[in-house]
Length: 111
Image 1 (tube, rainbow, N blue to C red):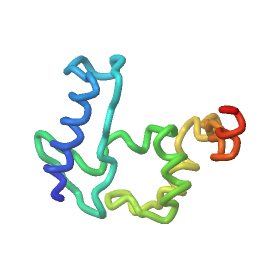
Image 2: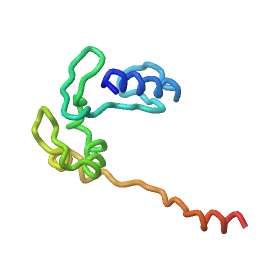
Image 3: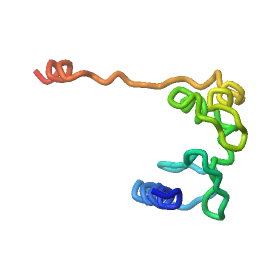
Image 4: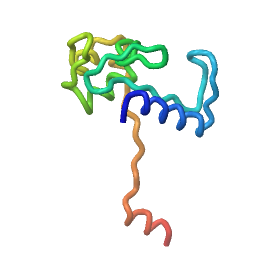
């Protein structure tokens, strides 16, 4: 899938989930961003990859560093792990998870 087709798919999903065009940083039900597309650099009117503000967002970089720590930002030549530890607020990002009950727990609750 091309980056442009991926963008179209992301916008379609956002629309189906109730997102309407609004001002930047306004509340929205979903926001799908394309952070990277392999090591490509794309700068068109509709699409900028790598995401232009990724280096400012601890809430993006810290979890990304857990799954792709050695991926290298194609413009900055720094790994995601390096960027994650350098971004302001990285120590404030906390993992959030819910325990998902296993099948036997669900079955016991149903009895």
